[in-house]
Length: 340
Image (cartoon, rainbow, N blue to C red; front, side, top):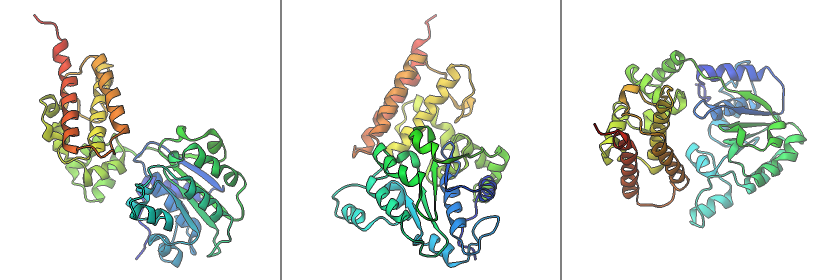
């Protein structure tokens, strides 16, 4: 049985195309939810595999097994610590000890100490003789100090080391980082292909389309919504529930998830106000679009809330505030109507 997770068809095509090309540093970029991390890891597995095929890693050799259990000596994975923990990658001993001792919380940026360790890793001899790989995801989470620590090694790598930077916001990277990488833009899958893939992951046929819409057409994001987000029917009812000020509409969601849902609703109402089609909701599920000014104020308030969503606020009180603010913005459409 293969230990390599199968890729979505659009990612498998990208992997095969990239494996036919040469280059020591790739920048995989595109909107979130298209599978940059999965593609980056698949490339690393193929480069390090002891029996590689034109279609990636064999999935059976010791190298593939070592990647599957997160212990490969020739693979360095750089992520924010919160993502490392979520995806099962081990932290360095000191970082893990600091977090266990509650000296600090897991970082949401790629720490410069981790990057310096990766630079040292790149300069060492390969343990398995297949070269080394450094995977950075999401690459835009490198701050300026961390990115600058990578620059020299990225430009003049020592020995047989390859880099794959996977990004969901490549424009946030330093121009000097982008210029040292070969860029590869991930293509959007066709809607039918994305729906078929979601159904293959166990999503009911009737729900796949609604989940794709809620995720803005991003298949990976749609799958995460299916596992962690509101049910499709609850998503469709959300706008009008917020119009009535029903806090239960966001009950049970983390503040960050609630804010993201409200940002999607605000985005669609701004699109409708401008004469464009909504992206995340069906037009028939939306209330009348409020005037531009209240929508702009609501958008700015949500952006401020997103920056502090992980602070230890009382989640219930924050949800009530978010719903109250949403209700006020949505009902401003009625308030703006002239009386007969």
